[in-house]
Length: 107
Image (tube, rainbow, N blue to C red):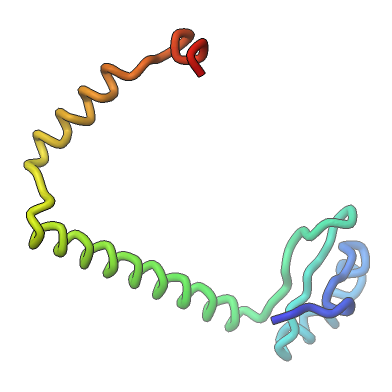
C-alpha cells in the first residue's frame, strides 16, 4: 500500500488534528506522523493493527513448521549427531578460536 502526501503528517499538525486523523484512520487511512522531518510513528485502525499482528504470528508459525520439516529431513538423511557430541564440538571450536588482542591483530 502506497502513501500519498496527505498521509504524511508533521507531529505538531497531528497533535492539533488528532480527532480528525483518528477518524480517518478508523475509516481505513494509515497516517505516518513525522518528527523533525523523519518518520516517527504510524496511526492506524486498531482492528488493522490486530490483523497485522495475526499475520505476523502466522508467518512465525509457518517458519517454525519449515524448520521442523528441515529437521525431520536431516534426521531421515542421517545428518544428525548426539547432542553431547555437538556441544563438545562447539566448545572445542570456541576454546581454540583466537580471542582478545591476538584476534584483532590478525583481522
